Structure formats: structure tokens, C-alpha cells
Amino acid sequence: MKMRREEDSLGEVLVPEDAYYGAQTQRAVDNFPVSGMRFGRSFIHALGLVKQYAAVVNRELGLLDGGLAGAVAVAAREVVEGLLDDQFVVDIFQTGSGTSVNMNANEVIAGRANEILTGKRGGKAPVHPNDHVNLGQSSNDVIPTVIHLAALTEIQEHLIPALNSLGSALSGKAREFRDVVKIGRTHLQDAVPIRLGQEFGGYARQVELGVLRLEKVLESLAELALGGTAVGNGVNTHEEFAKRVIELLSKEVGYPLREAEDHFEAQGARDAAVEASGALKTVAVSLTKIANDIRWLASGPRCGIGEIHIPSLQPGSSIMPGKVNPVIPEVVIQVAAQVIGNDAAVTIGGQWGVFELNTMLPLVARNLLESISLLTRAASLFRDKCVAGIQADRQRCESNVERSLALVTYLVPAIGYDRAAALAGEAHEKGKTVREIVLEHGILPEEELDRLFDYGIHR
Image (tube, rainbow, N blue to C red):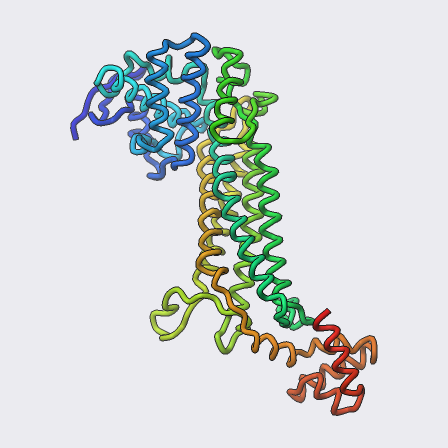
């Protein structure tokens, strides 16, 4: 690999010849390659947007030469569009302010802008990474802004639509199964009958409430730290800079963003990110319940519950021929576990707001955005590969209801709790149905028994 020499405040360093970034980014790559994990598309997209509109506004304010600003804006737009993703090379685990990734962006954009203007890649002239690309900004207000912007955009454009689609599929199954009577269960024991459609309606409502929680979170994420610069007091930035950049960002993402009411809160704390992660965790818990219920209801096919059938996607065993596993529900459950773990990391990260700066911004960004991405893909997969193809085993549902001892519950108003309990015990001991025992003892006439059971089951 051919290298070129770049210089920063610490001296010379060798940088790949084909890199747009320079010495500071290369030092970060050389000095802390901890995980091999880099920032993803949503983060880089949002970072590019901030840099693009910063250049536009600095030109409007007369702070940046029009030619330089134009080149910076074009280069930043290439970052937005993913054309320079391979140039974002610093590890997730870096300085807690995210300075390394901010300078990575500054150097990439400056290097590309210089290529646009002079034909020579990289360097600090005529466009300088700090003096021009980072004008009016600090890592300490840019990175919190990018976290909010990326999370808001991903939730609004991807996760909420995916959850709405899953909810619609579950609601469709609730309507399809509204006439399927099955046994209810509490404590994994038989309870009184319900409709299969009612169960699926409950699942649909869980997803709906998850969307409502996420929509509330968007309002918190819409408050951006931009304008606070280093410590929250806005040193070295124009008083109109943040307001104007945020107006342009609002138009870009289609959501009413606003400058932070208090920049010291916006930079010293990460409470909105913790709140968002909590809402994502709640969605994960909901999906765990839904996926696990479906997994149980489809268990069998002959020796489990078997009240529904889910699509068969792959052989379920390397040793047992013909076995088919609930692959997609188990995928969803594992994703949910990861999201819950990510929430723990975000929560700990949120605790590290010390004085005027939180020093776990990269950790918060990585885990928050991963959770959004995982839930988006899991919800879509769950809908397409599982929920859409679920079928009810009506015969199995009907048989389970008839054999259930919980039917004695409907006899309590007529014969009392204790006598009903005794009948249930006798039916269980003799391996008979409640109906058979009641008729055998002549406790109620058949038409009255039919009326009580029919009312209880179909109410």
C-alpha cells in the first residue's frame, strides 16, 4: 500500500495514499484498534448532514468563502449518500466525546473538497478540516446532535413503519381467527375458553402501544445540542448558526427539530438517548412475549399445544428427520435479548455525564442505533416469514376446549364452587370430560349444560 506523509500537532504520520482522511484520523486508527467495529450508515448519514448544512449556513453568514463552502457541501453530501463510507475508519471505542469520528469526518470532507477544487486528494489546503469543515462546531455538540438526528430518523423512517406493518398483520390474524374458540391458559394451566382472535388482538395492541411510545420519544430526540460548541456556552460560533442549520435539517428529515433549550443539559447529559433506549427495550419485551406465545402455540406438532401452524422454513434438526423448529420466533427473541443488553449499556453510558460533557457518546450511539436497526429488521422478518403464514388448527382448538377441566367454571353459578371443584377432580381422575361427569350424575339436564357452556365459551 502506498503511503503519504501527513502532519498534525503531534508531528508526521503515514496515511494511505488513497485516503481522504489525514493524520489525526490515522493516529486514532493506529493507537486504539479495540473492537474492529465502526460507525454504521445511519450515524455517518446524520454526521454528513450536519457538516453539509453547517457549510451552507457559514456561507450565508459570510463566515466561509463561497467556493470553499460549495466544495465542502458537495463533499459532505457524498458522505450523506454513502459514497465515502469506507473512509470512516476509526473504532467505535475511542475518546468518549467522539472527537475521533468527528475529526475523521472533518478530514474526509476536507480531503474530498480539496480534490474537487485542486485535483489533489487529502491535505489541509485550500480547505482545512478544523478551520472550514468544523467552523462553528465542536465534537461536544456535533456528536450529541448526530446521535439524536440518526436515532430520530431511523425510528421515524424505518422502525415505526416496520412495527405498524407487523401490527397490521397481527390485527389481520385477529380478524381471521375471531371465530376460533380455544382454551385460555394462566400459569401454563388450562383456564376458561377464549377466542384465538382475542389472543392475536392482544399482540396487535402491544405493538400499537410500542409505536405510541416511540412517537413520544421522537419529541425528546428532536432537541439538538448544536450551538453549544465546547462546553455549552457557544464559544466561537455565530449566534444564528445553530438555529439556521437546524431549520435546514428539519426540512431534510421532515420533522420539527429545535435547538436545545439549555445547552449545558444537552451536552452534559444523555437523558433523551436513555429514554429512547428504554422505549426500544419495551418494544423488545413486547416482541419477546408475542414470539414466545406463538412458539408455544405452535409446539408439537403432535405432542405439544399445536393450536396454530407456522411456516416451515428449514429442517429443524441435524439428527431428527422431519423436525421443524420455530426459527423466526426464536430469532426475534434473541434480537430482543440483544436490545435489552444494549439498553443496559446505554443506561450506563448515560450515567457518565460528568460536569459539561458525557464521555460515553460513541458507546451510546453504537448501542442505541444498533437496537433500532435490529428491531426494524426483526419486526419485518417476523411479519413476512412467520405471522403472515400462521394458520389455526380449528379441530385441535375445539378438542382442547371440550377436554378442559376449566369448563366447570361455568357451572359455579348453578352448583357452587366446591361442588364444581369436586367434579373437576373426578373428571381428571377418571379421564373423562366435565360434560360426561355432569351428565353421568344427572346434576344438570343436557340442554341446561349446553346453554351454560355455550354462553361461557362464546360470550
